[in-house]
Image (cartoon, rainbow, N blue to C red; front, side, top):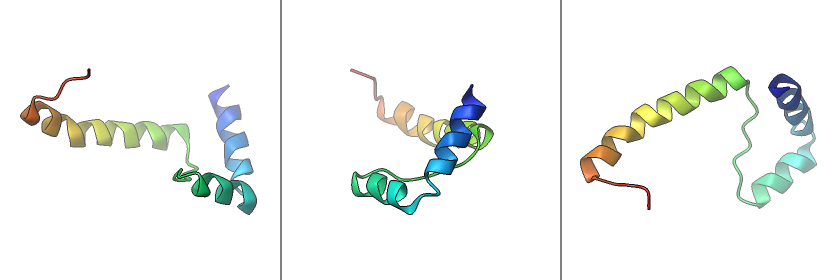
Length: 60
């Protein structure tokens, strides 16, 4: 199911009007594979986890 959804999202963003509409709403349009997204998330967690720990931040 995720592959089907991802493929449909990719196709929809090939329509310039759809991408522009999302950008106008403040979204960053990034159409990549589920694997690329998972890698991005891992990198972001690694990037920000030290900052969160150093500052003693907690979810409220």
